Length: 282
Image (cartoon, helix red, strand yellow):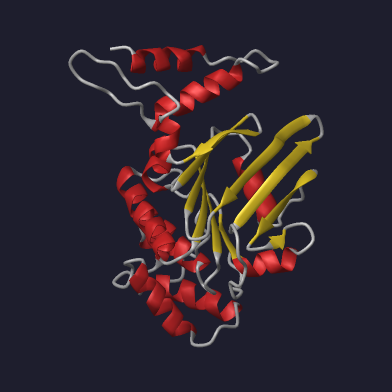
């Protein structure tokens, strides 16, 4: 899903979210979400299935209205200035939206034509080169590997040069090699100045890609910071022979477990506390 670009004249953060709440009947999905994303950075929204990550993305992409709270993307209010938001963004969902009958170049040319852009062939060739797909450009997409299809999907979402791109679980279901291919593509986006908001449930993915990481748990952001800041939340490891510094996984299970102690349903993740104890006591 792609949208045409808009000239980036706005100062301040690329994304600003404050007090977002969203419920579906009796199910409260978001309970007051706050965060900011700096321009040209990769921001990872990390959480388990059902944490509310996709709901946040759908609100920011103007596909869903929040019950309360405010959000601005590229300076545009998502509720009051939806057209401006859509001109600034691109959204890549959890499944690659590519046509398997067409070849890679034809997929890109088709989207460029739908966007009424000049010289769609040149646009397609440039994106194939950027995502290392030139040699595969004349092959039917049905013959592509999972990683190649995902890279093509991201390339299609960049047609029109959006300022902000949302990647919702971009490596879900991919094998390790394909995941690394997608990671490299995402890093290139940020290097080119594109702001990336990435949702993921994979701890290593957030650790590899993100400039800042926010952990979304039970509808709330419970921690938000750089990888170094999150690791600093845990005491340094004490080992007689081998020192083990806390990983992002240790941080995730520690903060989620602590939040779970306040859960009215009493779903405290004791296993996470055990893992924390094991990781810090050698």
